[in-house]
Image (cartoon, rainbow, N blue to C red; front, side, top):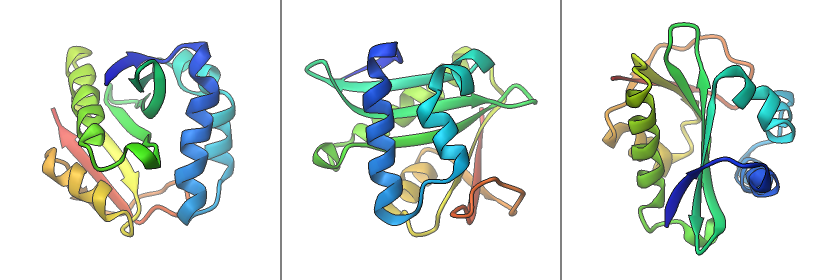
Length: 150
């Protein structure tokens, strides 16, 4: 597996990978649609980054780093396609996200998630993320807020 920066050729996989995991347990919300339908305008043009995990040239996972006002990044839309799960690829995507944020001198990574996503929570905590108090969010599914100071 290799991790590469998003290119326009990844747009379909970016959308499909994220729709699959969100629709499995939740519902797609307007903020999801914005990021999935317009990754260039909603993430990249705003100073964010999207990393794509590829296996033999095929996208199998992704993660976005959305810029925050304090210079940090929000980790969003992180997923590994169902057939590739359980092989440590999520950890590699998280490590790549942390490395990218550090290279950009970001003070922290922030994320919002759901308490039912046990494997994701375990990954985040093992990477050093700690829980934060609840805050405002555009997502109805969010009930866990976390950050990693860099």
